[in-house]
Length: 398
Image (cartoon, rainbow, N blue to C red; front, side, top):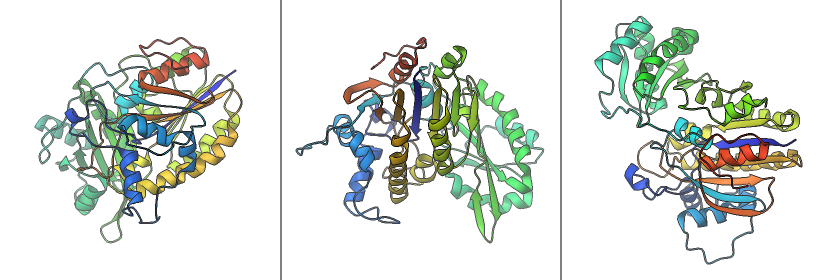
């Protein structure tokens, strides 16, 4: 029986979606602009020269970029050694839940609520509720901010007062950062868990717990114990389709949080390097008929939002090197799809996601071009390959 491995490289977009201009992202292209910056010598911190991703290239990277951004490429393209194409989003959002839900068969039927005021972001009602739930007399932040920058700005004050650091972005999200030891990890999770239903009822997509360690002398560092308290998907996704038909659904990274544990058999979290080892284990041991989904978040969290082109390039090169082992572990009847949920062009203005199409790399279906498809077509194709009923609106490209 067949197995499927869906690998989401968080934010690795490949060129503006047709409506990118509506999001202020016309011209954004995460992969393309990183490649250009590397080639011009502008991404030489911790690495040098052109982007070195031979596995991605052999799987069709150049052809994908040529298709998605209409490159004027007069040279011969390397023939892809697998299935390749580009997926276009339709849901009204460019955030993690929106992208993942749509990839797994459920387009977003509503518009998210956003915090548009960048200096004073939260209503008095939200602030009072956070104070009540955290048993504090105030909050810090209350603005749009980078997660690493805001803990440096307010970390010392947080340690002195005990007040949580609360901030947001152009995504529909409230993020709460506290010192993991001084405030307490369990207390942080409880705060976010209790706040989440209020936010979800108002179409605020996520409350994210952002614990950190350190002090004002040595500096503050976020830990790996982030936890997302996400609104439930508006309809059953591919995870539930598979689970309800008796298939094992294994999740790596923040997949469990994104889908509110709906249709998940097992889940492991950790940094990308640990998740890659977990993915190797699944390739070795996951049972026949299983659906295995991984999210590698550090492209987005460590490099995209921080506009770190060199770091993003290094991570792409690291990931590509790990594909060498992954490709050797694939069994005859396995289908592996590598894709993304949105863009986060590190060469772009601001620090937020970019509205982009995403690449589709497929191993297990031979060499073929699928052209431009929709996000929901990914779930339809996986369902067909696994022999389960497609409950969504997508069409299989198999």
